Length: 254
Image (tube, rainbow, N blue to C red; front, side):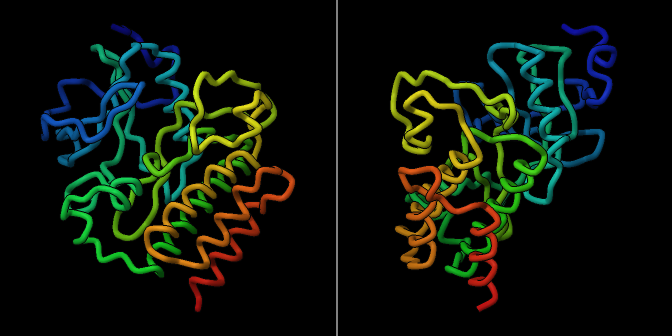
């Protein structure tokens, strides 16, 4: 229990666990961090997402909350605060939903359940979602940070908009260090897997993998071409996010 969280973390709103009532007992997302649950936030009378951290590290919790505030953007779920009175410690954020369900790009592309058919996504809609992802990623870079874990599971879809989530691996561009990977992750740039520090180009690579995944499922020549250029094995040959934004916007207008 953290008795005086506002002393150490004055800029983050603290939410009492008594204000959070289980709305759905099933987790809507999980990972090495822990689990996400939909809760009723009684103070505001709305449903929110509680992201619970398994390790109980309050500094890790604060850092992710701080980053969500720094990156405030139309394509990031709103952060309401943190819960630090009881373990597991957690982030309380906006419930970005579609038909009252959490829908990631991965789920929409590959989940065979009928929920995704209700979305009625056209190629034009996917172009808008890809633009949203690029816009927020560029916003992060302009703020001086890298996401470092962008993938189809870390992008939500709601009302035909894209939202980037999961900021647990965010790094400052100027302080990015090399990391040893024990296994190959397809969304991580090859140079990073080889031991080089993450860069804006490695984030572009991860975005390119999303573009290519969407293109292959919805049969979009435009997105496939953009995706292929963004996943060049040579970081110097990858387009900038500004270039991708211009290209995506041009296609949106057509």
